[in-house]
Structure formats: structure tokens, C-alpha cells
Amino acid sequence: MERKSKIYWYCQTIGWAVYICMNLFFLEVIKEFDYKNILLYLSFYPLGLFSTHIYRGIIIRYDFLKQKAFRQVVYIIFCSIVLSILFVIMSYMIAFLIKSRDEFKIIEFIANVINMSMVFIIWNIFYFGFYHFQNYKRTEINNYRLLALSKETELSNLKAQLNPHFMFNSLNSIRALIDEEPPKAKKAVTQLSNILRNTLLMSKNKEITIKDELTLVKDYLELEQIRYEERLTAVFSIDENCESFLVPPLIIQAQVENAIKHGISRIPEGGKIEIEVHKDNLFLHLHIANSGQLHTSAPETGVGFKNSEQRLQILYGKDASINISENDNNMVLVKIRIPLNAPEKLIL
Image 1 (cartoon, rainbow, N blue to C red):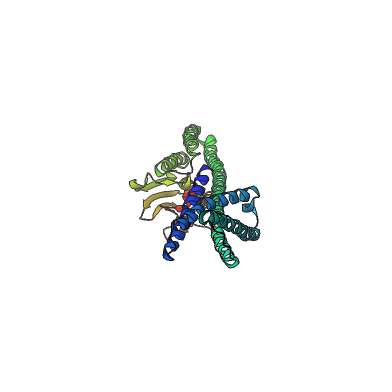
Image 2: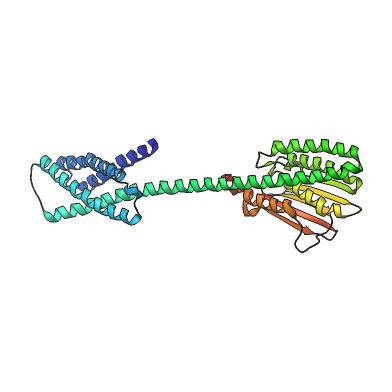
């Protein structure tokens, strides 16, 4: 409020000063630049400040700014005419005091009223325009805040959906070992506790570093290798320059889970998972490949794939993408592309 008041008074003082200077300039042009006319036009400065300030009080008191646009236009025109009439009358009274004469010409009076009406209309345009501009900016900021809050909520819901999914997969792996190999099941429980510790630490973040994400992936693969033994091979190809880049939590992890569930587990002799991370000038590229095939025209991508797709869109916008395909070497490949500079992230 204090800032608005300062802006108002700056505009008031500067605006009326410009108006007075323009009139004094025209006095010089028409060769009427004498001390009486100078005093007369200088008196218009406090008169203009006073009249528009009183008018501003009326606007605030009767909530003109909150009326419909058509009513505001009517108010502006009507009040500008009334203000100009009062202003011209006051100027005539001041002129009589300064020049000691009483001249009144109706045509001149009407011309002065019209001229001052235009001045007050311009004042109204600036005053009402500034209010509506401020209101527009405030609305825009509120919309951004609501959008950010909506995205935060949606992102939290997606993370809440993904964590149980990851837990169930891990517990199913341990359950399969309990009857067959109890010592390995015991080791798997220890490994799972390490994974859960890391997961809880990163659960509050919208993004984590590639390095932290890969630490979790490696822990998970160690857990799965207890179950699959030599049937599961993991190969990492990571550009060290990418380790500090930020990605959504579990974005690689979810694809690794899908690779094991829909790929490795269906191959009797097992297979391998290849994880590659690199970047170019515009994008960070995450590739997760696994032995296997896409069995249907609609890939069994499951919760992890759909969840990742939604989170990428929320965090990075339309330039981020995730795609799944099958190559000629009986390998299913998931490609994740994350823009290095995403303007959508500014609102989160």
C-alpha cells in the first residue's frame, strides 16, 4: 500500500508539473508570457493536485474501480466534465483576483471546460489503467501460484503412487527367496532396508542428482541379483559430466523395474539391462535397455512408465519425452529425454 501511495504521488506531482510547463510554453508561443499569466497558470498546479486528489477519494469511497467496465466509462466521462467545470470556475475566480478584471465569455468558458475535460479524462485513463494493470498482474501471479500448487499436488500424488509400486516389487522378490534360499532372503531384507533409507531421504525432493538416482538403481539391482543370480547382468555407461544433473526421483528405477518384470523374468536363461546416461547441447538422455520383446502392440509399460511420463510433463513440459521401442537385437529400449533448460520449472 505504501508503494502504491508513493507511485500515486509521483505521478500526481510530475503529471501536473508537465501540464503547467506545457501551458507556460504555449504562453510564450502566443506572446502572452507576462507575470500575471505565469501566476495564474502556476496556481493551476495546487488546484489540479487538490481537485484530482479529492476525486481519487470519491473513487475509493464509492468503489468506482470495482464497477463494471461500462459504468466506469460513464463515471469517467461524467466526473471529468463536472471536475472540469469546477476547475474552470475556480480558475476564473483566481484570474479575477490576479488580473483585477471580470471578463466572462460563454464560448471561451465552454472551450476551457472541453479542454480541461480532456485533461481529466487522461488522468482517469492513467489512474484506472494502472489499477487494472495491477489487478491483471495480481491475477496472473495468483494463477501461476494455483498452477504451481496444482502441479505440486499432482507430483506428490504420482510419487505416492510410485513408492508402493516399488515396495511391492521388492517384497515379491524377497518372498520368492524365503522358501528356496533363506540366507539369501535374509541378505535381501538387509539390502531392502538400505534401499528404503535412501528412498525416504529423497522422497521430499522434486528432483535428485543422477548420481543419487543411480545409487538407488544399483542397490535395487543388487537386491534382484540375489534372486536371479547369473540370469541378470547389469551394464552401466554413464557420462561423469552428467552425474550432477537433476532428474525426477525413481525415473530410471521405474524403468529398471519394468525391464525385470516384463523382460528378464520371462526369459529362462535371463538377460541383461543396459543403462546409459549422456547429454548434448539441449537435452539429457537416459537410455534403459533390456533383453526381451514387446509382446503386444500396446506395450506393457505398467505404472512405472505412465507415472514417469506424467512427471516429466509436469516438471519439464512438452520438450521432455519418454519412448519405448524394440530393436533388431531383441532388446527393448526406453529413451528418456529431459531438456537442460526448461522454462516450465520456474513455476514450481
